[in-house]
Length: 310
Image: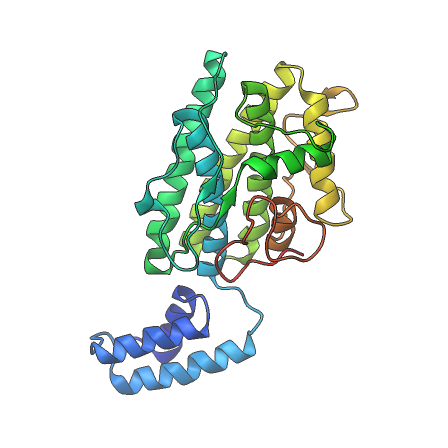
């Protein structure tokens, strides 16, 4: 027999908010959960409610994983369209919240074999990240939100000074544009998982997040190296500066070159990767330095508890 505190913690870790916990308790009582009796469940509800009041500002692991899932939907769709000319199947995008479509995207006419191979491998990894997070979250997984690829990249390129106001930046037009677009996502992905790691309580989830962080870091290094080799460091550095202007007063973003020398691994003075809070990550993908619930790549916002930029 498990104690009340154990079961309360189990419910808290598996539910995104108090409403989810209540639904879990109601369902468990109705089905005669064999693990605990009805009397224990009643006690758990009181304990869980008390814990919720005491830690009302706590962020559940499922909320963090769902936040990551929103980002993985965007990355997976971006790379899938670039490599295959189409996005994720419908059975990989359903879930809680408002389901959205993808605006824009087509196959990239790659000219360099190695870059096509990099893109294909990354596309596979990102689809697997989506599948993994959805499996870990189960019925708590959020749906893919509305994603805008066309106008969002144009807005980002305009802000970075890569194009003039009124011009259009087609991220799929050629492999150079594709690499610059990938540079936006991969560096943000690394900082997102680094910033979220201290918020995760469950060691299994933390280990999984660390595994995804490592893969995203490999991706980022490949993209940064390709940009450097193709002489695109200046444009990449402009994107880095634009990103840095969105996520607050600190200067934690680094370009592909620093002082004219290659900077493939952006790190602080201790050799550690930079991290962003969920709110700061949303500042970047919403393309706004202010608090907002939508914008940029997510015209209707992301799904889940963590949806407001800093």
